Image (tube, rainbow, N blue to C red; front, side, top):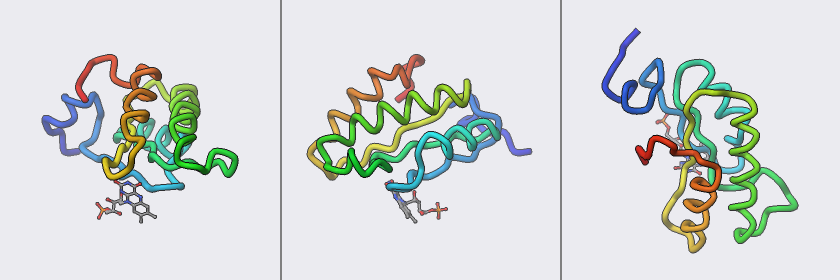
Length: 105
Ligand SMILES: Cc1cc2nc3c(=O)[nH]c(=O)nc-3n(C[C@H](O)[C@H](O)[C@H](O)COP(=O)(O)O)c2cc1C
């Protein structure tokens, strides 16, 4: 199958990046895509009703990062749209989750 520079950059087997799907793509989907050789992506928006207010979404992202890490040892991503006022908190959450130990993002 096709192997491109993005595979080497991201440490993935196939040049397939799953798009973020708000309220849909959480840890299970991201881990499944990553385990299949692509790059799974956690969406910013929560899937948990109790975390629905925007200020609590970073908590949700942390939970989803933890879940994803428990399901895959492969690289995955967090999708951070910049059109909301808490996006810095998402970046903090990703750093807290040590999502980018290779500092490629
Ligand atoms: C239900 C739904 C939710 C989406 N949520 C997001 C999102 O949170 N962030 C984002 O960057 N894109 C979001 N998208 C866009 C998708 O990630 C993707 O870019 C788009 O569906 C195009 O897919 P394609 O590249 O296969 O054509 C969403 C799309 C759908 C259908």
